[in-house]
Image (cartoon, rainbow, N blue to C red):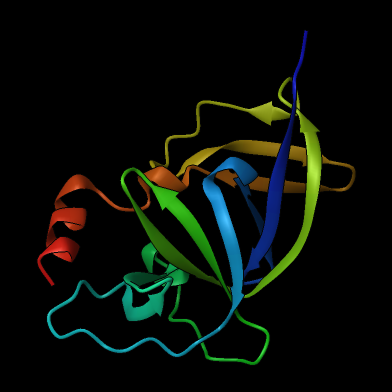
Length: 145
C-alpha cells in the first residue's frame, strides 16, 4: 500500500527540485543576508529569523552550479536541519503537490544531497534530502561563527 506525501517544488537554473514538506518550515521572500567572514563559500550569509541567527545557503553554489544572481523573485526556504534551521536560496517556489511514495520515486541516486527522482506527467523532479545539505563538520563550523 502506498502512502501520499506532500512536496514543495522549486526551481534552480530552470530545473525542478523538491523537498518533503515535513522538512520545510516556511518560505520567505529574499532578504539580502549579512556576510560572514571566513564562512564556507556556499554560505551567502545570515539573517535574523525569529530572533535567531539563521545561516543562508546558496543552493546553486552548494550543488556546484554558478552563483545565484540576486533577483526580485528569489525565495528562501527555511528547512529543519537536525537541531537547527537553515535557509536555502532558490530561484522560485512553484507549487506544493501530493505524490505517492511508490514507483514514481526512483531511488539509489549517488548524489549525497538527493533522495530520488519523481516522474510527474511530462517532467522529472529531483527530490532533495535537505538534512544532508550540510555535513556535521559544516554545522560545527557554523555554530562557531
